[in-house]
Image (cartoon, rainbow over all chains, first blue to last red; front, side, top):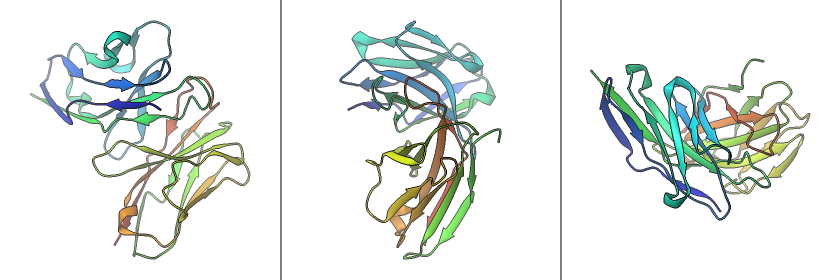
Length: 115
Length: 115
């Protein structure tokens, strides 16, 4: 079974500051890992995914995440926050065998960006 | 269509009533998923279809919940004898193939409120 833990239900950063959203996973097999973003009244949108290739994954809107097996982490970062980044972010995990697209989500982190 | 379409976007019903939620996936996507997102939580898996058949319904909470996909395209999630605890946003997603790390495309969701 897989699970993810997102540390911090709310994160606030200033515009232009570094964004760091934390995700730790638990999996009995090498996992696939994802970050999704959810804007108000919109569907979840994929930011990036890790599928056992390069450990540093680059996504849309300047976001990236690094898979660290030793730390069982997949933290999401962005060097400089924009106001438009304010949203809810979800980390998710799936197993690479069987129904690999069946995702288990974390509880989410709401990102606030202030002037 | 261009994306995953869900109707209705909002549904208010009374306890004990029957509810149907519809999902129209992206044309050509063979896999279809239903998730439930309660307030302050991440999406939780309910059921997944590959074609017309339910390949995994392990997330359905009880026998009041049922879903169908008779022609392998549109799916309907059916909830009988609704309870206040069923209030949530019901998300539908589709993907081209359930194997590998194919990206799920989510709809905007159907918000169900049970009074």
